Length: 181
Image (cartoon, rainbow, N blue to C red):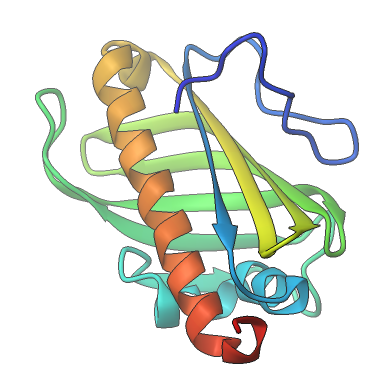
């Protein structure tokens, strides 16, 4: 879903994605589960590989609950594109903002063999609504390599975010069957 001027800005504690970034994607889904379940799946980053096939490993770089200042390193395979070889992307994310059960924002670089994202900024919001939790997310990428082909980079970013939301929805709804009638 492309960001348009009439869509509300996705922010966490007033901070959104990089407004100057040329690569940007945003999407949302309704998850038929409790806010507690959705929040804990998303913020228990060490367990991402158990419900997200594209996440092959996660290492927390600090201890305790996820909070502003927390950092984690995670890996995900990236297919070959017209500009880059197939590789494993290693992403180091630092949480910059977090309001429990409402939003989280992290940022950091992604590096793989033949692929470099200087900075990715990712914002998630979680809102209880009739029927479950509305999860909204937006991410931006910057860097000369990914900006050399904005359309392809945006397409791959979008593919990844859509898959992430689908996996989050499936895991939450499988984990929290009491949320559904």
